[in-house]
Amino acid sequence: MTYLFTPAPVQSLPIIGNTRRYPINRIFCVGRNYVAHAKEMGGEVDREAPWYFNKSAVAFAASGQTIPYPPGTQNYHYEMELVVALGADAFQVEADAANAAIYGYACGLDMTRRDRQQDGKDNRRPWDLGKDIENGAIIADITPAAQFGKLSGKRISLTQNGMLRQDAILDDMVWSVEEIVSHLSRYYHLTAGDLIMTGTPAGVGPVQPGDDLVGRISGLTQVQVTIGGSPQGRLP
Ligand code: MN
Image (cartoon, rainbow, N blue to C red):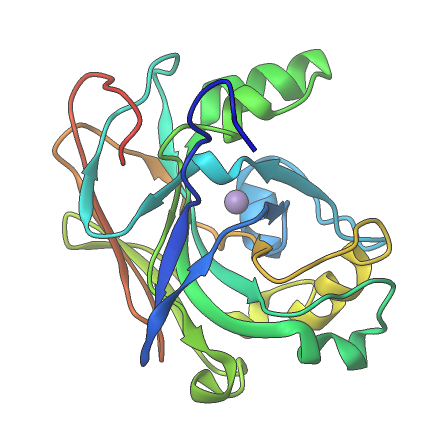
């Protein structure tokens, strides 16, 4: 096959203990999955069903680098999240069967133009400008699920310039990972390469150029970025 132009490269993540890389297909994100964060955003948790927004795979940026402060915002925020990496198909699966589709877990930052997200809320418009941001899905190396073990009791936290900003345990999630995979699989033919960012705990806040962000979940490789200066092009 001959293309009119060179196709965009596949985005991929390193895997702990594996020389092969994990190619990224889609990035799903869960909204309001921690009660305290829903409150700080002036909302409430929807206990009927989880809900989602998406980031493009090209929004991905690797951990451990400087990312540009993006154009189009005066209020760029960090959100520290557990990322689920699927390794098999899942379509209309029950929660107790969801684990079979999970390859591993990673630390991720769901970077957010909070002002553009608020515009969306105020005007009842989509959140894309607030959430689907170039270099705005920063994800660290994947740890295989068996190596990570049970999620229960594991701490999730974020420091900004060494100061603790977010601090919770994964048990605080309103919808469990299994429930999220099961629910999402009612709407999509989930497949290997699909990532799910599972929502952020309370304590989100703005970043400034020069800031150092480190997100940690016990048992996973930390995610780290430095916020750069004025907007640049998308990182390789
Ligand atoms: Mn989020």
